[in-house]
Every structure is written in structure tokens, then in C-alpha cells.
Image (cartoon, rainbow, N blue to C red; front, side, top):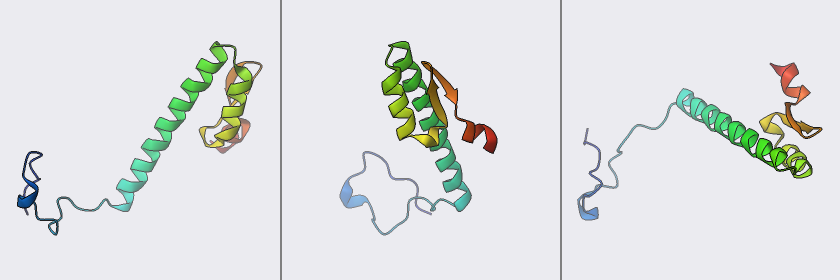
Length: 89
């Protein structure tokens, strides 16, 4: 197997037909999707908290409704887990 491409290697020296790494397995793709979803959820929570802290709870509610996959809702200016997520697990 050809070693990984040197980042400074000239384009003329790179064989575009030689795979540099194996394709991801279904388990690896699933794990990557789960990591991405967890990162998005954490970032969303941080955005909602910041909006509530700034007194923008209406905007936070709109953002939470636009992203139900995060699993949060804004109630009386505070961020809460939505009941649909609580029931699911």
C-alpha cells in the first residue's frame, strides 16, 4: 500500500487512481453522524443559553423550534429538555 501523501508533494507525483485510505465502514459513518449530532446539540444549547442570558428568549424559542433535533425548548426564559426527548430516553 502506498504511504499517505506528503502535504508538500507535487501534484504531478500523486496518483489519483491510488486510494489513500479505506472507505469508512457503516459503523464508522454511524459513529461520525452521532458525534456530529452531539456537537450540534451542544452548540445549539450554548446558543439558546446565550440568547436567554441576553434577554432574547423569543429568539431562543424560535431557534429551538427551528431545530427540534437538538431536543430543547425555551420556557419562561430558560432552556429545558423537550418532553419528546425525555420520553424517548
